[in-house]
Image (cartoon, rainbow, N blue to C red; front, side, top):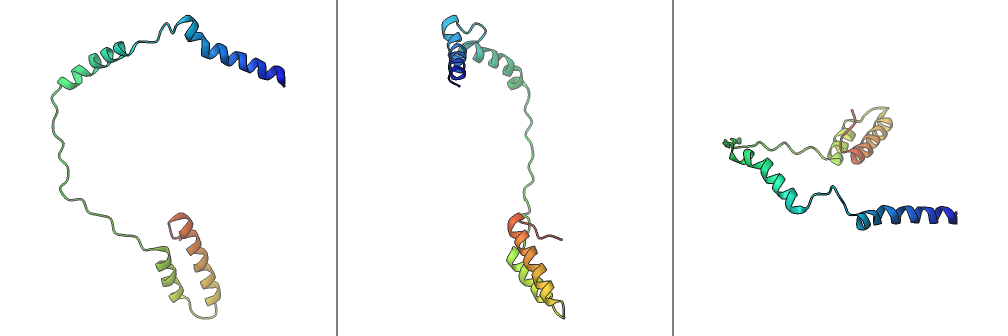
Length: 105
């Protein structure tokens, strides 16, 4: 285990120290990068820009019914001999709605 840690430490030192010791050769300087970027973007900036029209009024989506409100509505519909099973199913659906944000169908 100790030998493995020494090996990993040496590999990390070589990996991090190589650019310091021998230079980073192919890495462009900041000025070179800026010059290349401006040469690439110059034709794009010179092109004619046409304005984009945006719709004036955006209709807001209707606010969805909360899980608890839907649960209350489902409970009111439960009646008869199977009302206990209906209430239990509505409670399960309420839990799923609270977890996912959607009432299961």
